[in-house]
Image (tube, rainbow, N blue to C red; front, top):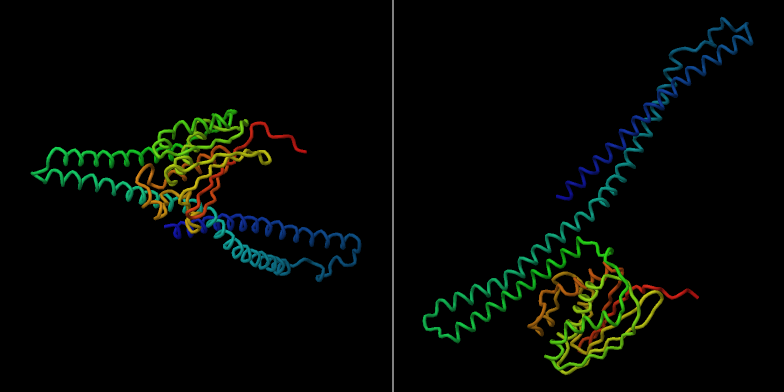
Length: 340
């Protein structure tokens, strides 16, 4: 599809360039031949006035065939020029067409991949939900406890689907909504504390310890979305860390930014997977097997990355297998320090 579109767009670009070139050449040809005719006749008349003896000399008369040869010479030069324009414009048109269509093609491919991924992710819990219900209904000897277990499993699958849909809606909102209008000055410590309040139940469930060492600095951004960003990072740190372990949150100023780091002692991320962790629906196999709770759809870090981008912030991950992961968010300071 995009090959055909590239060819058509190239032809349109080339046609526009050639129409302009041919019109320009026609004007130049007309102007040049008129000026040539006028110039030769004017020169001849001046010679006749200054030297009357040459008045009847046939060799000084401007002949039509001389003008025709000169006009033909100009025509050939312009034709050669247009051939060069045709070749150069063809290459330039193809390059411009590719540059124009590449982001559209990339967006189209992302959309196709996104649709395929969503279909796949929804099919798994739907299949489990359907099979669980069918098994329970087909068993005439199923007692109350077995039916209750089947319903509980169905509710869990429905909850996972609801979580996936909510995350997809959040991604759509971040894709289409401008957050800049909601930017305010935020206290960094309060931002992290709000996120910690959201994940407090998960921390207590795993009997973990949080060391919050974030300095109280003024940063600028959208408070609600940045809180969600830290909730996602903290949720990942809790999810992939062992019970009774410690998560440390620290901060430091660097240039015009505040760097907030969340450091865990979890299972870590392999070097091969690290470049892909912000991609939608990407999940490393080890992480998928190790976790049966929370967002298992590979959307959390993708949402976090989009939130950071919308808030003029930056997020980076460094990790070592079986040693832990450090997630660092670079937030723009509301009042940058004066340059020295």
